Length: 223
Image (tube, rainbow, N blue to C red; front, side, top):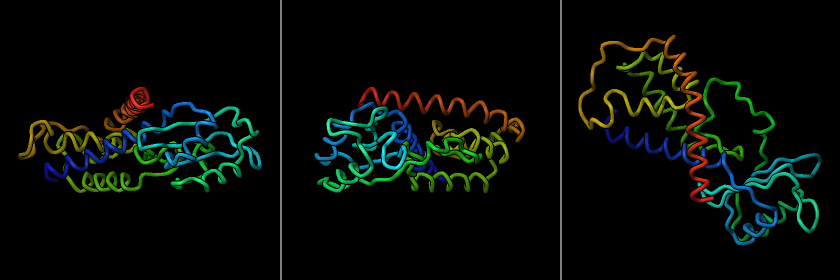
C-alpha cells in the first residue's frame, strides 16, 4: 500500500473518529432552541427516541458534522409536551428538510459483536457508511499482507476488540509514516495472536478515553 494511499485512508478514518466522537458529546439545549434552529433551517440531522405511544425521551440534532445538541429530561415547551407528531410537523415546515430517524441504539446499547461500532455510528443511531467502507478496505489489506510488527491474528484483535487498530496499522505498517516513503522496515520479532488479544483489551480502554476526550474538546471549542 503506497504512502499517499495510507495518508488518505488514515485521514478518512481520523475524520470519522472526530465526527463520531463529537456526536457522543452533545451540548444540552431546550426544545425551544431546537424548534428555533429547525425554523431557521440550521438543523441537518435529527434523531429521537419515543417514550410511550407518542412522548419523546430525548431529541438529538446536529447543526454541522461537529456541532451536536440534545434535549433530554422534560421534553416540553410552553405549548405542552413535545411529541413525535409535533416534531414531524416542525420538520415538515423547515426551509431545509433535515434527515429524521428514530434512535433505537440506546434501547440496545451493548455491542454483541467483536467488530467495533467506532468510527461508524453516530449518536443518533445512523452510520457513516463511507467510513465503514474505508475500515473494511484497510482490514482486507491487513489480512492480505505480512505485517512486520505483529501477526495477522494479533492485528485482527487490535482491529476489532482494540477499536483503533486500523489507525495504528496505517501509521506503523509496513514503515512508520513519520519516516516518509520508502521500503518496509524489518522487525526482529512479531507480536503473536495471544499477546495481541491482550493488547487489544487494553487498547479498547484507550480508544474510549480518546474518543471522549476528542468529543469533549470539540464540544468546548464549538458547542
